[in-house]
Image (cartoon, rainbow, N blue to C red; front, side):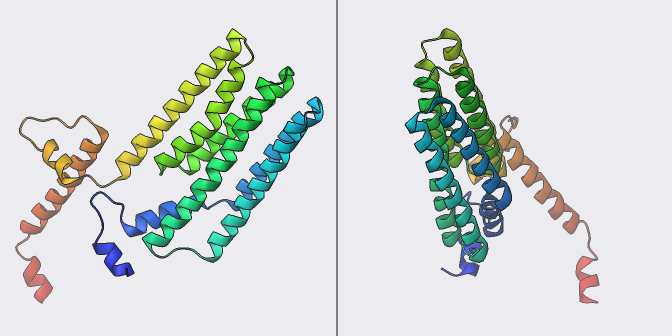
Length: 249
């Protein structure tokens, strides 16, 4: 399908082509920050393995570094072949989602091994802080795509919470619950931002403009604001009888 066809023929509520391409482009920005973050996580995992001499933690450190380097190479590939169509952008978005979930899942496994099967509290602190910091930073990058946010949060949070529970410590269990609630709130925030950015559907607009209705939800308020702006623009055009004449002159 051509670029022009994609611009004019798209499913309802789908983002415009230019907006969607910019959204995907933002996923692959800040190459240096991505590579530096992967190296820092690998260093943290190496420190935890060095302190405990656990071979499984050594394996986690190596795998985290490999995935981080692979994601950095993926970003370089995107810079050399940026998509110009929605179909190509969706393929790149899917590849990014796979890499992000694999990376966060490896962080979760590192936490599960480091916290659930080791008694070193320094390692516990290191695993939890580094994982939460990376997941929050990654969420800010993918906030425009809630399904990626949810997938990465589950991949990192579930093993982390399980590792805390395996300690058989009520305080650790409480921390696991609090972290899970924090991640849940983070997902709801990003989902709300994404809902606001999407074009409102015809049903939403009609529901907003029903007699006596009040726009309560974010989507409804956005629909009403857009409709009001379009109506005001049409009113200004209709109130200017000399527009046609001036254009003709």
